[in-house]
Image (tube, rainbow, N blue to C red):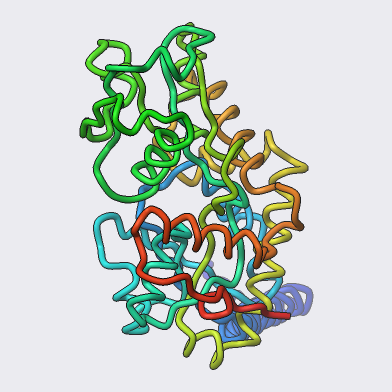
Length: 334
């Protein structure tokens, strides 16, 4: 016999509760989306140009992004690795907010009237070293020898000129272009000395078991290292953003310095192509990078006298035609 079935009062209450929970969940989800959109709207997008590839030397930036330090200061940082592109042209055209560049390039751009200024020092010290195989090589041992460098411009070239002038080797050595083959060229004895970055090739050579002699340009020259720069217009119109950016950069660097193993883990995740068996090397690269970042001055601070010395050095090397006042290319933001 067929029986007519209906919902009991108990089941009706359960169904009502379930419907209420579904509606509440939908409301909460909508609220979360609206909150997320509102928070995103409160972040200022800032685009950073770096004329290189992703690298451990930029670990503080990766740390600041992953740990939410930039977002803490209302900044959504995006990095554009513009290798081979006209970084200064992009800044002047307002295609980016700021860039990381060498001090010599900034000063030369100032003489050209590009209107770019440094606002945060990244490397306090000049990052170039001259390296020879074998220990205890003396400058006079290099008479008649070959010095290899990537090309006849840029930071490596300036470091080479400072080195040969310092030790009276200008007319007693041959300087040759070897591209970015410093280790191969040195080990194969194609050249006798190479210009390279303090936080890269010397570390590789030592870990590979080579005994080397290293002359650090920073040990005898007051030339300043790379910094973050932007256009005068950007720095003026986005003063509050840059003020917050400086705080975020400083905190990111300090966190990296205090948590180096974690920072390297973050670099590995961010870059994605670092090999696990190379961790010892990359750890030493990070340590050397932090040595360049931390100097006698507070993190990020611009040292006017060091820039004045850098201007004089570039003038004496004929890279610029006049000794300009550092106030033309330095911006002090509070």
